[in-house]
Image (cartoon, rainbow, N blue to C red):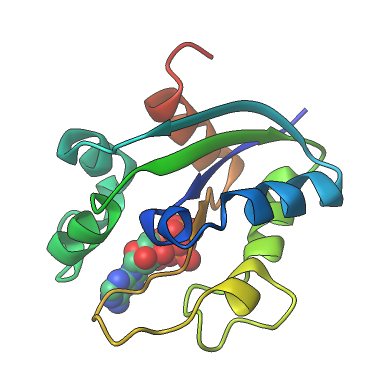
Length: 138
Ligand code: ATP
């Protein structure tokens, strides 16, 4: 069965949205098989966002993702990678469709960061890589 790595990012934790995100994952029918709350270190974020370390927004992304604890979740189910991306909505929360997590729970705050409440792996290969980073014991 497929697995994906989901993060409730620091903005979602601060705004009290952990339960709502978990509720949507479970309501859709995916199984939560691992869950952990923790602060992401700079090293861990560099691994997780390896494809972005050279981007101009990388320093701001690390500041955003280090600004409080995150909740890391492994969810399981048939086509869960694509399914959770669909639940999450598009990256920009202002234009994300209502009904999606980002469309319903996030917006632009004018901070320069894209604060969009959740992360979800973008492909099964990324999911395997990211699960190994966040849950080496799995
Ligand atoms: P995620 O990987 O978090 O599910 P995504 O796949 O929609 O989101 P990516 O392009 O992988 O988006 O970017 C990862 C994260 O980096 C985004 O969710 C956002 O928080 C931040 N980000 C992406 N592009 C920008 C940008 N141009 N300016 C500022 N932050 C950005």
